[in-house]
Amino acid sequence: MQMRSKIETEDILKWVVFGLIFVITFPYFEPTYDVGLDPAYVWGFNWLFVHDYHTLTQICYPHGPLAFLKIPTVIGHNWLIFLIFYSLLKIGFIYLFFKLSNTFNCAFKSAIPVVLIVCFFVNVDLLIIGNCIILNLLFYKHNKPIYLYISAVLASLGVFIKFSIAIASLSAILVSILIDYYYNRNIIKSLKQIGIMGGLGLIIGLLIFHGFVPLFQYLWGAFKLSGGYDAVSLHPDNKWALVLPAVALILSVPFWNKEKDVRIAYLLCLLPLFAAWKHSFMRQDIFHYRIIICFLIVFWGLILLISKEKRILTFIVACSTVLLLYANMRAVSWYRGINREVVGVNNFVDVLHYRDFTQRIASMSERNVSPNKLTDEQKAFIGDQTIDIYPWDFSYIAANNFRWKPRRTLELATSANSQWASAEAAKNFLLHEDAPEFVLFHYQKGMESIDDRYVLSDEPLIMYNILNHYSLEEKTNKFMLFKKDTVAHFESVILEAPQIVQFNEWIDVPKGDREIIRLRVLSKNSLRGKVKKMLYKDGQYYIDYMLEDGTVNTYRYVSGTAVDGLWISPFIQNPLSDIAEQPDVVQVRLRNSHPHCIQSAVTVQFERIKLSEPVLNLIQDKQDD
Image: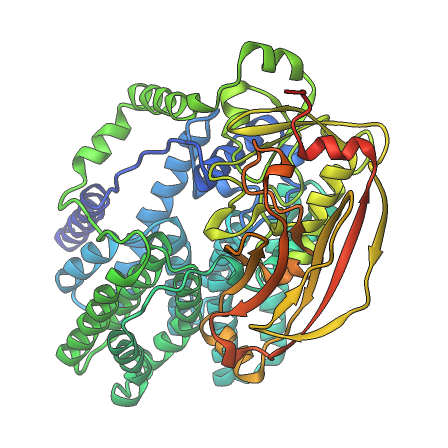
């Protein structure tokens, strides 16, 4: 009886420790939405989940229908559901981390500081991925398939939250199955496990999408979009003297630590670690760069708990890799350090005051989007008719309570397969009854898109359909309002003969008369460029516009959509100015930031879009001065 009482007391104390770690490491949450690119889609996914779930299941985007479980805000009960989901994930993560330490004979007290430090740096992504890795380590050690199946459920939820979570989680599960087969040589067992996990994922997917067709459409679209987001890559001046030693130290682990269990853990983490590397360094702003730092902390936490030998060396290498990559953070865009409160109890208490917290967040969000409120006359003109926002700022919908009709890709298509995604989105602007009645085309710095691109070149197929099927109704200093027409505006599209030109070569632009001129561009990476893109990222593509007054304007462009036509003429820099006041483009030049990684020869083809009289009013102010 005394022994049983002692065991029960120890169990209670352990759960007290679990609870304290949960509270102490509770993060600061401010689930507001705002104007701009990322805050707008945060609102969009939350709003659609509550108000138009059917449309949400048709969206093709790296985030899935359950995206609010990663990017919540206080719409409906989304924030409450998120809190419950996050809490279950975090408590489960803490519990599994200690269970793992016990499995590998690490003392409970020794595990406390490791788990505590790790828990300061995990978000929803890392909680799902980390739980999957730990569960598969337990499956390897105990040979109980239940661990494998629970990890499959978590990975399936990750698929429908954000596809990057799915890639990392599923890669760990795949390696786990291969390791199990290597040691057991039982193909029937492995196939059975794969079948059960696939069945679990299918059931979850059917429950979420209410049918096979939308489920497989989402999976296919997510797969196409996961080809890489090189178009939105930033290229800061990395300190490679810091980055490369960190990479070398990480790759060296299985060579100097020959413990079997450590090598198994390393193999399970290797593909998720590479996914974190790609995710961080592809975009490489401060928000994405943190991913690799936080993942490394989880990775080294696992290795330290499992290691029985060379723990001091492991700790030194762990600190060195994290500090080296952290030191490189100063090079990335919008740098600011990673700040964590020593104790998160105040964050936890704030959330416990649920009503006050949600009211404060809702008020902040309303104030954030209020600059995008339209006048009463403008809102009355649109009324209850459907509208979409181009290119991305859905806060116009949030601020004005419009009847939103989002396109399938939700916002800009900027992946490696962006031509496919752009074609999908362009279907939303054809002359059919399902097309939105209005399109609000907003701009901030002239016609500049994100990352110094030219907005009329981002998605040529969408621009073609909007200008062809919608008429300009109003132009302000913030947006143009288009209304769906009953007839097409373009008379014909003429393609000139293809030309083979070189990067960095000036190309003469043909004179246009009552027409739009675009340049279709097809370029290819060299073998070296393909390897670089796979391991790191692609170079930046630029187009230089030589104007008739001798000035040169430069914009980035997306190679994936450039095959559909980069906008050349009329070269609109100020949407409020008359076209006649803006100089013509006489030459253009294509460039790449890494010319040694791209084939120098590129195929170009000028495209002439003949304009009828109505479309001329689309790019000029309708009112006579």
